[in-house]
Image (cartoon, rainbow, N blue to C red; front, side, top):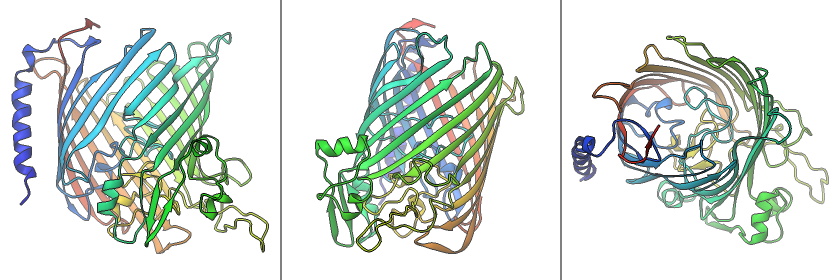
Length: 501
């Protein structure tokens, strides 16, 4: 007998009583140095094969492919005051879901500090890839906001800091992070016997970007950077074989500076980079003649290991995007178009050096997959772009990206017809070929669409409340036909202390 509906009713009743008593505890105006709280109820219902694609993806992993699912979410945050030289922030964000991968979710739990341009963050915090609009883009190739946050310690310059003496024409930002994946228990219960699963996997990431241009003096700005990540350490299980990957201090160093493995690692690691190293080159050119409108074009180049890190091979794969924001347009305020192709992957041939063939040939990069680790995923959701279909959609209990060779198009439009009403529309199309090792019998198309309206009153008794209604659908043989809708109701406020804005 399922006890979650009873528990859910009790939670919802408690939330209603709590929110009803809040006015006496709260100040009407937002305050700096106050605690911002949020209560949210989300539910989706659908017919067909799955919950539709855009009701599952790019939601920081807080979603479910199972039909007729939802959650109750409670959160509280102390936001950083960026006008101060020293500031701090913290957040707690939990959810009680039904028909999800776990019965209780700690979505965010973190603390952070900032002094001048230097920052540090410890814990799990929702983050997005650079340059991509989180509401309209299909997602960054390395970090799209598609999976649950990875607990980590992150230090660096998170926002551009101007280099002294150059008049604001050159800025720099970057970070270094270490953490660990948290889905080993879920993998143990979800993965079918004999299929690959991992435990105690460690995480490293780093990034560096430069910005050339000063929009206050000239509206053209160019940005370029590189971001890299590595899965290392841990234990891998597959078909009775157990692989213990080393995690000594030397191995942590090899995660920072990608190097070959030694005799303590499998043979493939000794002729290649140790661990599952992935990365992304990012380039962006923005034209910002006025504060209320802009146009930018961006390109992302994904790479696995070292084969496409440099220009030894032609960069045929990538994501090309154009984003425009329009001045005070009540119907269309922003537009995004993206083209993505991952068919090449350094070519179909791969040969690591051996006694018989001394020449090394890089190929078959097999994006997001790895022969030791469970791939570039967390809790079954791909960490990169979701158009490369996440393993959570597999029905055979296999954590494998079964079709990573695709060509895709994506459109996103948003608008604000009134100050309280906004909408967005997403449409994606991809053609899929499977992988080099396991190609599909024939190409499969995938079409996904979303229409969403949000009402957030800015005045009156309903200020602080927000309601969102979404309709989404899938078509094509890859995912099958699905049609569904989602409803999200939330209440946001501030506890009554701190100074007014």
